Amino acid sequence: MAVPAATENAAREVGPRDEPRRAGRELLLEVVFRPLSNALASPLARAGITPPVVVVANATAGLVAALVLFTGNLLLAALLLQLKTLLDNTDGALARATGRVTLAGRYLDTLADLVVNLVIFVALGHVTGQPILAAVAFVVLTLVLAVDFNITELYREARGIPTEEPRSTGGSIERALAIAYRLLFAPVDRSVRSVSGWRFGRRPAYDRFAVTVLANLGLTTQLAILGLCLVLGVPSVYLWLVLGCLAVLATLHLRAELRVRRSPSTRPAA
Image (cartoon, rainbow, N blue to C red):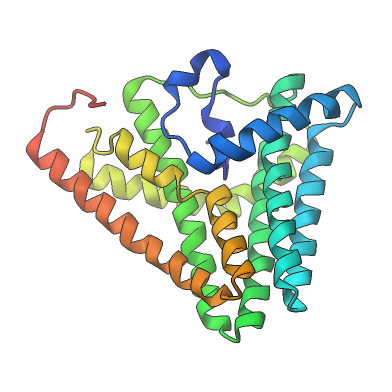
C-alpha cells in the first residue's frame, strides 16, 4: 500500500543529511514555516507532547478558523490559518525529532487536512455567496495536492531517491485510518499515476523545475495566499486563484509531453 499523500514534504524527506536530495522546495515552507516548526518541535518534545496531539491541535486551529471565517471575521480567520500551517508542519518535525514517524500518524495528518480543507471551503462558499465556485475550488485543490505528491514520488522513483518509510504499528486505529485513506485518496493517486504511465511509461517526463512548481502549489502556500486574500477582504479572489492552478497543471503536462518527444531516452534528467 502506498504511503499516504502528505500535504507538505514530510513524506518525501529522509533527513537533514539528505537535504540536497529533496525533489522540490516550497519556498514559503522552507524560508518561514519549517524553521519555526523545527524550533517549536524541540520544546514540545521536552514537554512530552506527542505528534498526534499536535495533529489534533492543527486540525482544531483549522476548524476554528473556518468557524470564524463563517461569521465574517476575515482577519482572525487569516491568523488562525497560519497557526494551523505552523502546527501542521510541527507535527512532522516533532515525529522526526522523537523517532515517532508512524504510518498511523501520516494517515491521521492527511485525513485531518482533508476535513479541514473541506470545512474551510464551505465557509468560503458562505462568506463569498458562491458555494458552487467554492465546491469546485475544493475539488481542484484536492487534485492539485494529489498531483503534487504523486508526480514528486514518480520523480524520486525515476532517480532512485529514497523516501522515508513510516513505521507501521499494525494497530486497529492504523487499520481504520488506512481504510479511510484508501476510500478517499487511493482512487485519485491511482488515476494520477495511471495517466502518467499511459502518456510517458517509465520515461522521466517531469524534471526538477516541474516538481518545484508543484511544491509551491502546496498547502502551506495555499493557506498563506488565502490568508492574504482574507486580510485584503477579497476571499472570492482566492477561489479563482485555485481554479487557475488547473492552467499550471495543464502547462506542466504539456511541457512534459514536449520533453518526452524531444528526448525519448529513458535516462533520468535533472
